[in-house]
Image 1 (cartoon, rainbow, N blue to C red):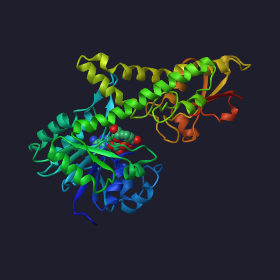
Image 2 (tube, helix red, strand yellow):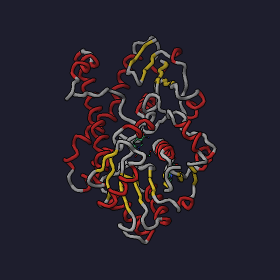
Image 3 (cartoon, rainbow, N blue to C red):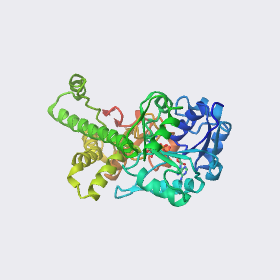
Image 4 (cartoon, rainbow, N blue to C red):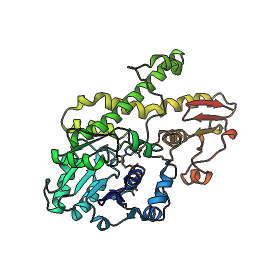
Length: 392
Ligand SMILES: NC(=O)c1ccc[n+]([C@@H]2O[C@H](COP(=O)([O-])OP(=O)(O)OC[C@H]3O[C@@H](n4cnc5c(N)ncnc54)[C@H](O)[C@@H]3O)[C@@H](O)[C@H]2O)c1
């Protein structure tokens, strides 16, 4: 072991576990805290609970139960001198952030926090969360004051499927809630993150992560809009995009909308904050992009129905196959999947909808309350990733 210092990683999910593995691989002892008992057991037995993540298998096999000890009990992390937190922040039905999971985790950390400890949040959060809420929860529980402990924010920038390589190569920023916290956090993180940049504050680091998501959401909305216009004009969007894109123009790819835990969520952090401040008009593009992307399923539903009408069968008997229901190709995740939403929308319209997805077995599809089909047996196939409608 190259380092004596013990680091706790709270949240061993798709983002947290690869980080825990990279920290362990840099010579640190890691205590992984996660509420999921089964996941902890697997990790301690050297079994990777996220097998679709390249390079993670070998790291968990090497360090699981040894240099990485997973536990559900925060008290097992009381000897750590740094706490890195990567747990989910969801939005509620009104699109406001629901801080309950974060509050519970930080209050538990507060109860074991000692003088000189460093706490770093990595979950994507509204700007100001670390310096206001997180600081308050930690101070209230520990009885310590900022300065007794250090607090920083460093947005996690992994992408499922590229988590380890991103941690090792991708630029990552870190910012403290005060100068000393920034310095301490930078000093520690640079021991396991090679491409690290210290920025002026935690709030700025929070903002950096969100605006990246906003950029992508808005640009996907633009691509979706231009795609619809191109089809209406009878020109090939993809050919146009190839020649339009250059150093200063990067038109994204169209889709059925934007899914997953990240991009459809982050714009709401800014939209809601501006609404709270009475600055409704400041987030107009962000709001419109969210709406446009969510509405794409109506566009595709109409196209699919028009194709079904060409089949020589009553409309309600035409077998439609939605091929691909995850939010992104190759990632077994259905959260906010617009492909799944499209299948459900067509079902609500009384159509005969089946689904197929290479990531899911027939049984798994049926457990979701959907009908499975071999695409070759369908009358109309919509490939949700290729955006192609085929009549068989
Ligand atoms: N996965 C990605 O590609 C990605 C990309 C960008 C940002 N993120 C960020 O990372 C955060 C986490 O995402 P993820 O993909 O790792 O989620 P995930 O659902 O894969 O993992 C979250 C983990 O946290 C655990 N957990 C929940 N509550 C807990 C608690 N109170 N204490 C300890 N553990 C708890 C869960 O059991 C789970 O193992 C997201 O909110 C997002 O901000 C993820």
